[in-house]
Length: 170
Image 1 (cartoon, one colour):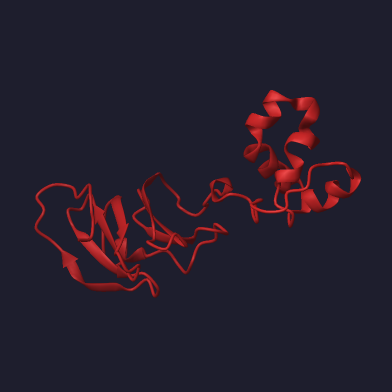
Image 2 (cartoon, rainbow, N blue to C red):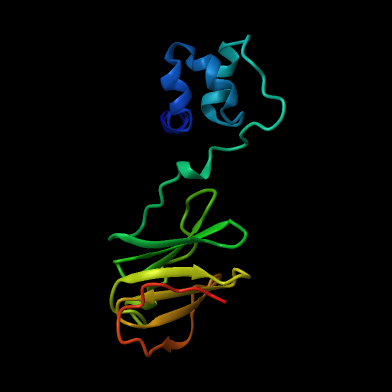
């Protein structure tokens, strides 16, 4: 319930700051009806506005914090369908996340330390079909990954004389 309350406050900060005494009138009806906070409090306020259509089904994705990297996150990208997020970090890993739940999908792509990049990952991107991920690093290489299995595809792409700071698919 406390986590739901925190999400509620983050989501409706502007409305609450404009009219704190009307907290329940101004914001509660617009909270996701499936949230624990809404289910517990809506029954206590019978004369509130009812949102019939277009209300939140779940808390907005911006309410998520993705925990897992052990150093600075240097790059993030959404998959083309918006369901996944890929992140690169100074911890030399690439991680894939579920964009709705914030949960990590699979293990970190540690090829950056075992069989891949030996320095900070500086840039990541999904392919247009969402099946591949490319990562660039300060070790002057690019790596291509299978987005589902996390396996590195082929050999590193070498040839840069400086850090690879930006990657993209065409």
